[in-house]
Image (cartoon, rainbow, N blue to C red; front, side, top):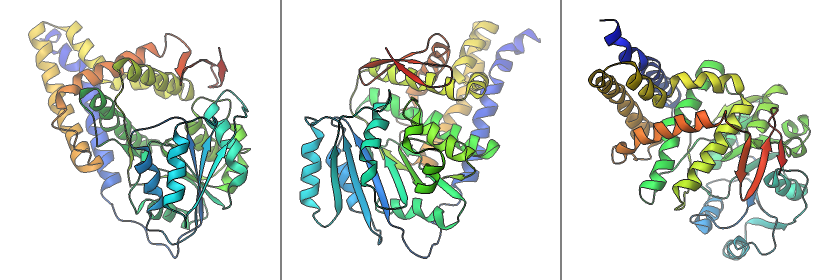
Length: 378
């Protein structure tokens, strides 16, 4: 009898963790209101750009359509004078002549993280004490700046980071990647927030005080790291500032890509997290549904194993659908629910492969990640 229970014991950690994320999600998202503040605050927004993204013009224009009274400065950071995105940026400047938009083209390299080098080159142009770094593939709602800047009413907040989702997909391949935000990233972040507090930032959109950045040594403190977003949040946190996770999602606009490209990116993220949070990354393995599937199949007769896996996915699909429909509101589920077991197996595979090497491919360049998270280009 005890041997027959092994497949069901194997699925317990992943099932319990899945229910825990649902509880943490409910605690975080139950208050959807925007906090009250006295007035809007002037802000400088840095956008590092390399190449074209899905809907680049609309992504950029969404920052020019903010319901926001204070001055806004939008700086596009480009390294290559032949970058195809420059034409789009120039069109944006012509369409919004009354907005403070500038284009900085500078190929100078300050370290192995080319994105941070790009930001360092444009940083002297920033005018205001409130700063933001936001990826080029991000699209936002008109109330976005209102939402993130409200948290700075108190003096102790050093950085506000925004969760992200992908609601528009181009078939199964992009849905496969978008599902990672719904089933893994957001549940993990809200659970970490509840259990241990926020000590890192999400790279899609990060808003922070100039003083907080100065306290960690400026952007130069990030240029040798792959996980510059994690390091920005973590170093500001260790400098004594409070980090806040905003409740308003930004939209990550995914373009059609091959499964191999997506897998390479997922592996890069996994190896990045392994060196950034080694203890937490190792411990996270026990909560992975993919590991539970493998363990259940190996621990008992096939019929019992399939029964245990079915029970696991009754929980898993329920929790992920609730995240999709009510928390992220990306509406990926139930339409793409059949991809969830495949998504979980890939997550388990990349978790394992993260221990098998220290090399990553990033925008066509091969890097070695050292044990301290720093990069060496090969």
